[in-house]
Length: 472
Ligand SMILES: Nc1ncnc2c1ncn2[C@@H]1O[C@H](COP(=O)(O)OP(=O)(O)OP(=O)(O)O)[C@@H](O)[C@H]1O
Image (cartoon, rainbow, N blue to C red; front, top):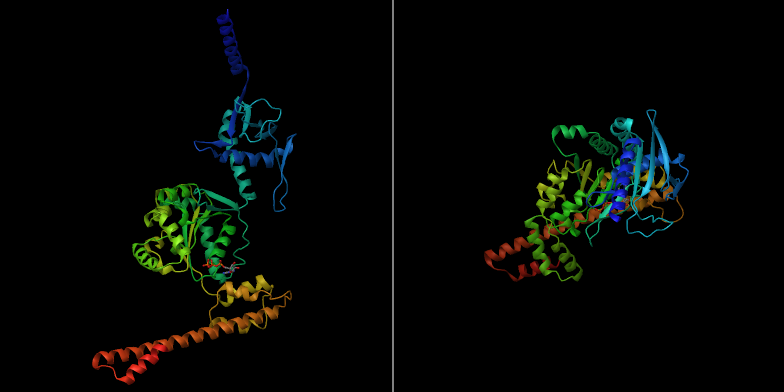
């Protein structure tokens, strides 16, 4: 009897499925929040979410409100288990928002909000071609455009504990407008960046991965980090600040690279200090390290030794086969000592554009004066211009000297501060030159005495002279 019941129920289920197939004229397509082996967040899902939030959510009966920081307006999106209609070329489409409920979940009136979501798109089967070939593309393109309009830039860094990227919202205020640099050079860099972003087809045509390397070099405080922030704000790219000493080996480096997104700037700051990338430097450093007893330096050394990233690993990172995964990436290296870098690392093609960040010139000062004091011209500018042609000062120092020293924001007082500092810097530089010359002269005198010693012995007078020079 049970067998008969069982087969009857089985038959009914089959019949129901067949009836549904013939009489339910709708097609359903699901888009899940997480996909793939590693359950990555689906780009299609996020694009649909943006599209629905902007285009259809206002028609939904139940909305979900998300508060956002930075005084942005509240985001109202479609709530879970809600449906909205959309229209495309006269065809009606329904979207519903659902959550996966795992089989083991015990019944609850309040389904957990932790369960992954999915959207279901429902349409009549006679519009299959239009929907699958045109509408879905339209939704994804629109959704991506909305995302880039509303995008908050992110700043990533690799976590030394598990070597994964962790991120925060990128909020650096630097722009090319506020960057102290000669206007012609700024325009040149902005044009270069714009050309890069518009050259997708060109890169494909010449068979090159769509990426560009920038080497920023110059003394500390000349604005290398500020320039990176200005680039990110200009391009609207995320920044991946890669701490190379926290990467264990080349494989890990490759994985980190693969995990970066398109439209991003990958930064390695102070590349010359990050790793021992050349055999020669490694040897020299090891010799110095042996003499060094500072426990802090020893610890840093142990850290650095544990990283097995090699020069070839880094070269592969920049332009190996893996570097072509994704596209639209800018790679930036910064250094204070460009001469210490291995030429292979910075040759054109890897670091396509070398940008020298140098001491402040008068044109760059004018940008800082506008930023800090809101002044574009002043009778003291002439003196300042002359002093800039006579001495060096980094933009960081100029900025510091322009800051009001008290609540009194008197422009003239601030400019006089700067003039004083420039004059002091000029004096110091002259003193340095004088001392160098003195040392050079003393060295020459010692050489003469040494030579005389070798040639014919030392008289008591010469011995005394040598002693005196050494003391000096
Ligand atoms: N070119 C510049 N334009 C505007 N501000 C600058 C510039 N250079 C330096 N500054 C100011 O000086 C500070 C330090 O500059 P920044 O960190 O960019 O220099 P850096 O060259 O990266 O230094 P380091 O080599 O020590 O990392 C910045 O916060 C900024 O306020």
